[in-house]
Image (cartoon, rainbow, N blue to C red; front, top):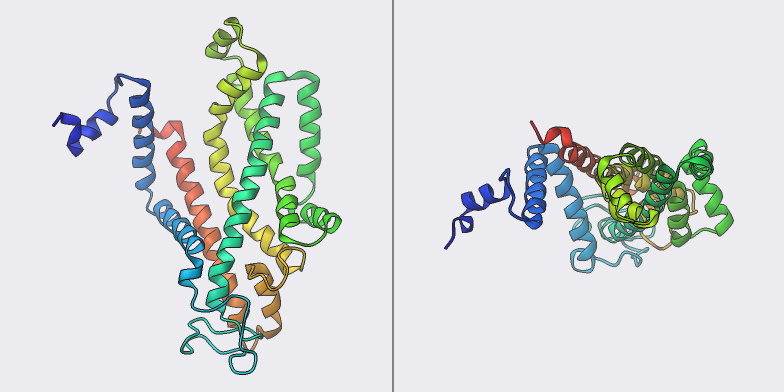
Length: 308
């Protein structure tokens, strides 16, 4: 057994100032980032909330005690929380609210993941190309970005959904189309900071094409800032999706989308408060989790924290 097999030896091997290989350097950097992250108790709480959301979404059929779309209108309509068999009560159609929340986590997770997968690469590509190319390319791309930034995200998403038609797929497209401009701005700022650096000049002298320089050397430098911004934006994406669902332009009945659940429960907010309150609490908790996680990642990935 070697020294690095023991926990203390592995820790010393990961945190050494003189890594023997590129792999050791990458693993050591990742481990140091994790140590900074876990020192933030609120960030760990946010990570736990998001992991719980993922687990609930993956095992929704196992965890849900009832069907999310079928109810007992005759015998189980508007039952209060704590009713045997219905921990969080039922809605106006006799459907179990807990089961609808559990299955609704799938929709929420799908929305944030698909929006991130669509919007983040688009913003990253636009920002890095604009920052590296400069000149008229930068001017054109940034003016287009400014046009999108000038309009409120929810209003712009409403316009796109109104044009495309209601539905969860169109809502995802609309939110993604309105979410990429901030990522483009961040990527452009990062690119402007590194495009004239010595290592970029060395790569250019070696004959690398502009496309290769952007994809292989500039984009990786922008990823940490982009990951932090995407994580922080998840809460806004959830709220936008819930807003579209509340207005009837997102997920359509009988899908258990949290915003649509609030919309259907607003008629009973005074007497049967749980119908709208429970999905509202779910939105609050998940949004809080993403914000706490984003704050923790921002501190952990900040290079200035590495020397502290």
